[in-house]
Image (tube, rainbow, N blue to C red):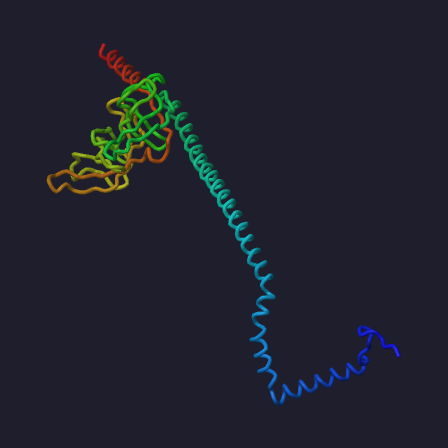
Length: 296
């Protein structure tokens, strides 16, 4: 009698296998409920097969690590690009803010030019500060306009707020300005509140001026506005110079120590205005002719 090949043999039927597995499941449930030997067996088997599990998971772990490394490189590259873009945008933003501030200052200077030329008929030249000295004791600046641009010695230099200084050295294409704060510089001033006239001098310190040789009973108060008096013909009258900061009594005499702070400043903007002396000289000549005609 011929028998079927081994791989064609049939095992138990489906119902028999279902019955066997059902009985096996019930036995396992009963054992796990009452005897609890299988949890310990499972733990032992888990310890034994743990290295095999790690080996089985190794390709997936390696793939995850490689993916993380690639992602980190991509993120690093993207972060570098974003930071570079941020710095570029930041630079452009700062430049835009500086241009807006400069534009605002130029508009104010334009308004000051129109007002000065309309009210006083004084010629005004717009100049730019080339550089300031690094020496803190040297209170001078250099402008980009000189004798070639009709700049003359003694001309007053202002910004949109008030007096800055005076032209003291002249070159063909540049000029040097001595600032108000220079210890050798003085400006005739007048107190707006009561018309008191005096001379304000630099102290050699930044943002500090002094009114010297005023008696202790002089009518001057804190926050008084000081403007040019026009005496001497260098500075046109009525231009703001400083505000009174504090008043102290000189312990060595009967004079008051009046400290002021300048209203204008070269540390704020780059553009300044140079006022012509032509109007002052013409006014002086007109006054002299009027006096002469009155004498005759």
